[in-house]
Length: 216
Image (cartoon, rainbow, N blue to C red; front, side, top):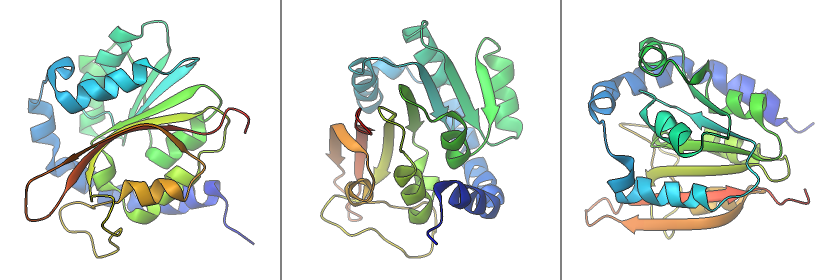
């Protein structure tokens, strides 16, 4: 019998909580110092533009909110849309709650938040989070989208579309070919921006908005 997205969520979540906490802790100082002006950062501003083109949103759920700054920015931009910011339970989430007391925060990983909040009209947002997730976890997340009209906007570094997804052991962060991963899911890409980095590793940066079909 095929494994359900809920089963995969529970299994992957149990195996990866400690790994994710360690990985995200390595980036905590950098992320907490990076009080950026999101409207002036090209990739972030493009993500905001993509979100602004969506209609019929009933809720926004940020995955891996870190210090909560982007969630606060989204809440200010779209005050009429309920917003939930999420991250793994720990010091960073506690600080985010303290610094942005007017926001709603929940603890949980990406798959848990999808299971908890997925319904038509809900937009999930992930900014520079997916490098902490393995290909199997990204695949489980993408293929877990099933509610008609549920959407995902993400910004992430990864591999160019012409390079295969890597399954090698994770070192600093996973490199994903998001085009390949999206093809395996029911998500339909609405907007996609790919910036190619001039470096020997041949990395790329993705800003993508995708959604399940409205008719299911």
